Amino acid sequence: MSKSLFGKGAAQKPGKLNVGDSVRVKAGVKDEEFGLDLGDWQGWIAEVDEKNELILIAWDSITLQSLPAAYISDAEEQGLGWDTYYLAPEDVELTEARDVKTRTERVRSELHAKFAWHHLGEEGREISRILEGIKPDDERKLYNRWGEYLSATLTFPFKAEVTEVQERGPLRDGDMLVVHEIESSEDMYGLIVKVTKGRKTYYFPLCDLTVADEKSPNHDPVQLYAVWFANR
Image (cartoon, rainbow, N blue to C red; front, side, top):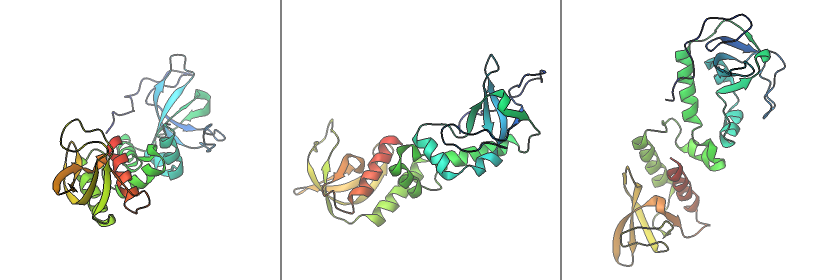
């Protein structure tokens, strides 16, 4: 989980907003990027600039849970934040907190996990669907899920090409192999598949292979796994 965005707060100064204050967005204020109406969105002030011209609001869990999925997904793809927002002080008003920060941190963590791969666009949304419910840092469960998904999706055997430069070992970039099955997984290399080249058998990282036939139903699932592995 990322470091908390919430400060401990400060003594209230007349005419000045402070870190830790609970605020609500005034009616009619809109998100400039997506056109969403932010009116009544609520949270705590996480930052105030030196001139008190901009404040950073960390949304509370009630606001976070009301965010449209498409908004979070698009923000992730464009590299924009969605759990915090910069506004001018005149766009908000002080209000009573309606939430507790521990719940907000939990909801933030759950949403970040749910949309963890959406920055990769359409492929990322499909990856998120495959890995739903697994934390992005739980590599053992992630590899297990990929193994289950690919074992159920792929048709073996199939031909594949080595498409990543190999610093050592008997196999080289451009070699054509036959993939027979998913054998195991390793922390550094991910899923390991059993392959043959001629009469010889090898065990090789699936992430370094591309299905030879682009029209094969095996092609996209293997490519999806390789994209995930490169961005994990």
